[in-house]
Image 1 (cartoon, rainbow, N blue to C red):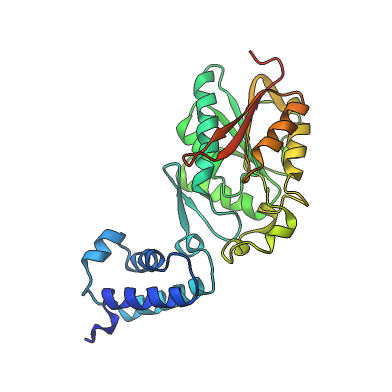
Image 2 (cartoon, rainbow, N blue to C red; image 1 turned 45 degrees about the horizontal axis):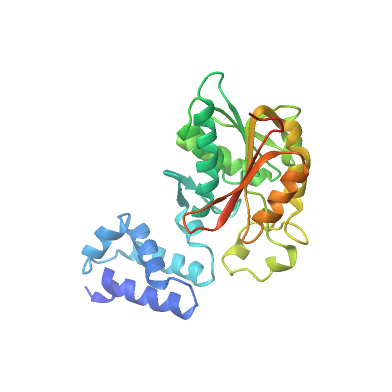
Length: 288
């Protein structure tokens, strides 16, 4: 057999093709794709440089590579993304879970643990998308009752599939922000809403343009959803309730001001691992 179809050569060719297409991490993406095609992890793949690909594997690799050079996000091709210790299924129905959003989860989990299991706290994830945040909450705090809502029926179908696959019980509701959940109140409300200004959406990375526009577009100044959440959340929080949202770069001070103006108390920004103000949290008025 020729060495044209061995692992080492395939990796080299794939890296070159991705590089030519302007993909940001060509070598890393080539490794992920090939390991996926071979059904082994990246380390095992690196150790098997002279192993031959079957014709089927060659074909599969070529087709994935073509999609990636056309800037389909890697996570959509691999079909999963790790998030807070869970494998979340990803496809074009919802935004890909981002690592920086784990900061929002941590903030919420800490609040639920502080409340403790009795009475069971009720949590809500607004704009749930793939379901990642709600599922992380439920996984880390099995004593909590977790609800999640989204305006996109497609996103909700993906979120439900994720909940089933992970055997985590979350109640999903279709509808625009709080419209989805009626008059209920919650001890924790989390949201990673769309926050990119409309005119910036067209200038995003090619990969991000493949993600659902409605999951990204936050209106003219990117703050539309924060205004609505600030206006509507106070009536949805219990006396011991906390609201926390992810904010885009530089948005935290403005979001904090919106929350303060809405009468929420203890408003503060929480930084992510890189020291960026990533989350804004606030408590129900009169919170002790």
